[in-house]
Every structure is written in structure tokens, then in C-alpha cells.
Image (cartoon, rainbow, N blue to C red):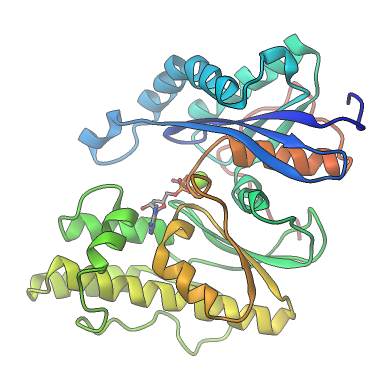
Length: 336
Ligand SMILES: Nc1ncnc2c1ncn2[C@@H]1O[C@H](COP(=O)(O)OP(=O)(O)OP(=O)(O)O)[C@@H](O)[C@H]1O
Ligand SMILES: [Mg+2]
């Protein structure tokens, strides 16, 4: 690594699913990280299929990544040779999609002769919150996204203990499916959140999943079935949205608060696409815990969060990754 007495510029790339994300972060010698740029191309080609088509996702990444990289460098007001390190997501995700960003990042690092850091997508989601506050263990990390609802205890920096997870659907998946059922469009999270402002959160009596049960797991499939029945029973999309959102938010917040009590953690990082939800942010804000959310544009998949994870690796003195490592579809973050 180059001279640590000057700020380092780290490029981050995420192509794990259907967003082509490239971001740039500056890491000061004191260890503070600041996002200089964050550009995301969200693929629209999948809308007609009602789900992500892996082959099309890979092809779109190939076609877009150069332009998004150029946009990110322009936003950061840097030239490519100003970069001091490159980070890219190696998993989990769609392997073909991951490979595009991973190979691009490795090639770039090799051409520039700078270190390369392979990043875990979920660690990236957690470090998205480092845009708002320095993250120092111990803390709890709740990752609520399209594919994950994972609650980690982070007893020391870089150590992740999975203490709870969804038993069925991820939280974001439930938002998407219920939005589709109610005819509210895609992506479902923002659509539910918007429709909920015009609905009654008590109109449909959803039960809070797993309430009163020991442990810190989550479940959303029961809400999905209850939503289907309420929809058939004539509940309006707005009331369905408001009532589902209330039940989902209560489950996420109450379980996390219980986990904080049990582990004695006073800080909670809440990240992933669902962390953009306003009702969720307000409910966490009322818990009395120190809750850190990612900054604007850093909740859903993006490259800046991967650059932030790379910055944390550099700050912790972790060695750079070998250039022969591959992409992995399934890669648990927990190391305990
Ligand atoms: N305001 C919101 N309220 C609730 N959910 C939201 C909101 N905005 C986005 N989401 C949800 O976030 C999800 C997308 O988040 P993200 O991009 O982090 O997930 P992903 O990358 O698809 O999954 P993973 O990171 O688990 O692989 C979608 O399910 C979307 O509906
Ligand atoms: Mg994601």
C-alpha cells in the first residue's frame, strides 16, 4: 500500500445482481472514510420477466460497467491513475454477474499496480453505514435486503456472529411480493412505503410473526398469506400496504431490540434496501438505541459500500486479496 500519510482513494465495484455499481471513497490517514462518488445503473430489462434473468444481468453489466466507472471518476473529480486501491464484490450473488465486476476490478488493480480487495456483499451492506458514523465493534448489524434478513452480533471488528435470520422470505422479498399482489408495482419497497402513507395501519389485523418466541429469527411468509386473504377479502392496496408495513417493521424492530438487550449492545447498524424505509427508520429512532443507517443512495446495492468495506480492510491492516480468487454464489459472512 502506498504512503499512509496522505488520503487514499479506493474504488468499489458491485455487480452481484441487477445493479451495476461503482463508487469512490477517500480514507484519511486518521481512518475517516468519505464517499466521493456513487453511481449505480439499475437494469430495467428484467421488468418484463417479473424477476432477474441471470444471463441478461451479466450482459448488461458488461455493457455498462465502463461508462459507470467513468461517471464515478468524473463525480469524484479523479483520474483512474489517482486510485490507490480497488475493491469488488466476490460473493454472494449471481456468479455470472459477480464475475463481471470482479474481473474488471482485478484487471484494473493489476494495470494500476495497486492492491485489490475482494469484498463480501453483506459486509458491504453493513459498511454502507460507515458513510454516516465510524463503525467500531461491538455492535449489532441487521441486514434487511431483497435476499437477506440477517441479524449479526459483531463482538470485534471483522467478526460476525449470526444470531438471527429469516426462516423463509427476506424482508425485501415480502415487500416486493405484497406490492405485486396489491398491484402497486416494482420495486415493491418504495411502492408500499408510499401507499402506506394513505392507508390505515390497523385496517388489516396482521399478527406480528414469531412474537413471544425465543431466539432472534424472523418470518415473513405468514404475512404474505395473510395479505393474500385480506386482498381477496377486499382490503384496499393502501390499507394492505400500511398494515403489512406496520407488522413487518414491528417484527424487525422488536426482535432487534430484544437482541440488543440480550447481548448488551448499545449500537445497531441497519442496512440493505429495506433500511431506506421511513417507517422502519422512525421506529428504530424511538428505541433509545444508537442506530446507524447508511447515507442517501447507499441502502440498496451500490459500489460505494464496497469501497467502504475495502477502506475498513485497509484501515484494519488486512492483507490484499490474491488475484486468483473466484466468485461465489453462496458465501456465509458469519465466521462463528
Ligand atoms: N423504502 C423501502 N421500504 C422497504 N423496502 C425497500 C425500500 N426501498 C427498497 N426496498 C427493498 O429493498 C430490496 C432491494 O435491496 P438490495 O438492493 O439491498 O437487495 P438485493 O441486493 O436485491 O439483495 P441482497 O443484498 O440480499 O443480495 C427490494 O426488495 C426493495 O423492495
Ligand atoms: Mg444487496
